Figure (tube, helix red, strand yellow):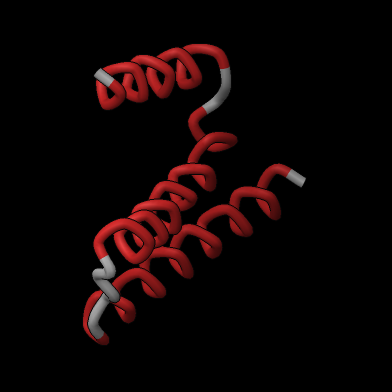
Amino acid sequence: MCNATGHLLIISAFQRIRASTLAPLNYLQLVLAVAFSVLFFAAIPDRVTSVGMVLITLSGIAVAMAAVQRHG
């Protein structure tokens, strides 16, 4: 039920706001997923997973910065 509600809220947000505005918030999902897995399951990400998360986050930041520079 919570998953469906979350998806409906995401769909609603994308209907109301440009995707480029919401894209950086998607990276918050990554941070929260790791935090919840550590807190509730004591599952600490391994090195490969951590490197992947850093690469994904840095890519998102680079895309967001490029969009800001493009649009002034």
